[in-house]
Image (cartoon, each protein chain N blue to C red):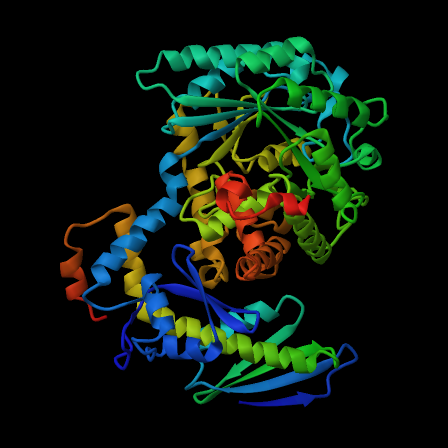
Length: 497
Length: 114
């Protein structure tokens, strides 16, 4: 229903108050900032066609006229399809839990792993591994990432080898082969030369955990004997980084009460070890992390303050070396580029099942890591969508249970997400919501996840709009995985040294 | 819009606000109340010409801020509803074109009242 006094047709947008002005964001995430009086003119259809705001808003698909409308609808539709690319690719991330046993007993373990000596009945059988691979290779996605998880998967290196062998063998039999990438999520404690050679030869990546310098890391990440794991992890991490090709080893850190006020030391530790990025990750309030030591140990406001401060520091670091913060890179990619990120925790519809899925040692298929944790801790199978030994790909991934979960976690149909300016960049995690709020889709507006993400989006847009070209070039270098020197050859890197 | 602060109980004050129902829709008012009701008790009374919103137990130090942000939020929500009405059809066409493109989009657009 058009405003008949309008000079133009409004195309879909959402808005928010932003640093004293109005941020308008269109259906595919392009944004524009207007003073309030110009925003008023914009929505009343009274912007002059010769004004800069009119021209900018028209070129960015906020404004149209009847002649241009079909073309502009097609342009936005194409961009929308690109943003929602993950829906066409279907499940690309397949996580396989080879064992629930672990040689560490981390005090915040969100999957409540079992001690190493618990027995092989907590390991996946070879027949179940084969069944998992058979299901995975039926996925319509041509690019598959298999993440080998635990517990600690290196405790059953024989199973890792069999999984990789069988996956490659079966993939070779396909008429149209898939591109398969393997990642082993390990604490590195059991790593040896034989394993490292295997990873190198098979081009398998390593994802590990490092929470910071020794006292920080050891405060949570302990061996079964109660001693800290830092010394072993540091040596083996350096070894793996030097032995494997560049980019093959990554580390995640968990923000705990022990490091939230010492993130600069954590960044320095990552750099000194030779890691080329960091992923700042708030603690997951599940499993052992629900203990009073961690539960509500820091507020969302604490996290945001520390995030903003450490981001400034990391940006400074990037003036002399490429060292992106990965979560920021994901958010920036959503804000600045037309592309889908493939990050399953923050997309709409939710990525559970349709973008990422996890196969437990029992063969049960869960929609996310937190979903299998719910089964371990509470015996809750609400988010179990089948079992590899009892179902086909179709019965697991096309069942009514998964459809219901996905349809209930579509932010576009939820209040207040539906009219939130940051919707094109955001999404929700139904399992996380269920654990925290006892419902898949709570009123998100006041949840910690919403407050945190909204403030992070605002902060990043403020940085982009700061006019500080050095900062902007650095952020752009993260998104494009290029050095700042390539992005902006005129920058004199040496002057920062 | 008029507002009034009345004596509440020991937990805080009661904030009363009155809005013209010709200017604001009940949908905008409900969206706004949802934003505020996580730690406040809100009652809405309506008649043909006005809505009366009563927010209970607002701390005395906060009351001016709550009133200002409630009114600001209500205005924003009304703008959202008004503009959403204008581009609702276009949004539906964009989503349809994204997932099931049609070949006669020009014809469809020509026949629309937009």
